[in-house]
Amino acid sequence: MVECDGRVAVVSDVPMQECPACGERWISLEVAERLDAILHQLISSGAETATGHWDSFTSSVA
Image (cartoon, rainbow, N blue to C red; front, side, top):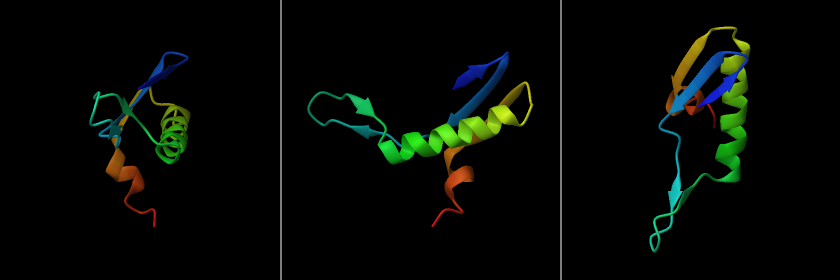
């Protein structure tokens, strides 16, 4: 989720990795870069609130 100038964008089901020993979770650099682009696109749409599912943004990517 990101908020910018009163607008909110949410992307659900973002893939994460998890440490089997301690349970700490993180996203890969590739996912982080793609998520940044997706959130920028959603915020730039001008909608007050924009949401989307990770798969809907990445299914067309080879």
